Image (cartoon, rainbow, N blue to C red; front, side, top):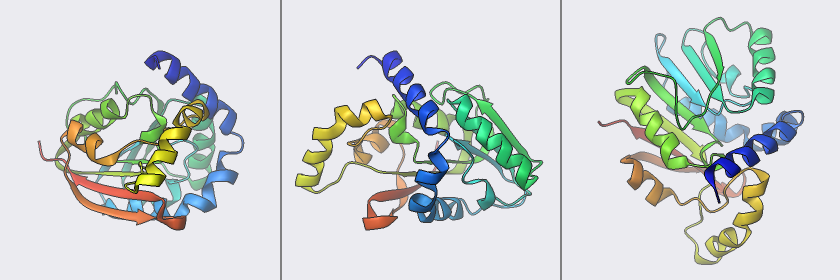
Length: 209
């Protein structure tokens, strides 16, 4: 599928999801989100980038002292995140509409970066992870939480089968973890299964440039 067309499909899908996103995705995916932010091992002065911050469901998990920048492709989702920032009174949060495949940040700008339930929702996951590597300092931590293609033969085949439908809904059902990390040049320090039925994987990498 043409990348520009897929990007428009993702934008449209998340415009529709915005009003009900929290209701659908909060309680189901909460354990994974909590574990992902915990793996960042945040220190008081850390600068953190969250890619695909959406409506800001992760915001309560961050210490107030860290400088957090959140980006998302959907203005509708970010509008919800702005409301959450105001409710939580978090002065060190910056939210921006941005394409994660081409970030408006300098090299080595952040101490750590995280993407929860985002990598399979972007048209070019390789480009997004490469950008995360670029903007995170050498030795910094990159955490990704996502559903990846099953390593079990039958389940992987089923995920391939439904992939065209899932893409129209705004995400990839058959994104393979190993080849993705290899293309980006990341080696996982940790891979853990999380959430219901262990259907999602939490991946922690150190940015060794």
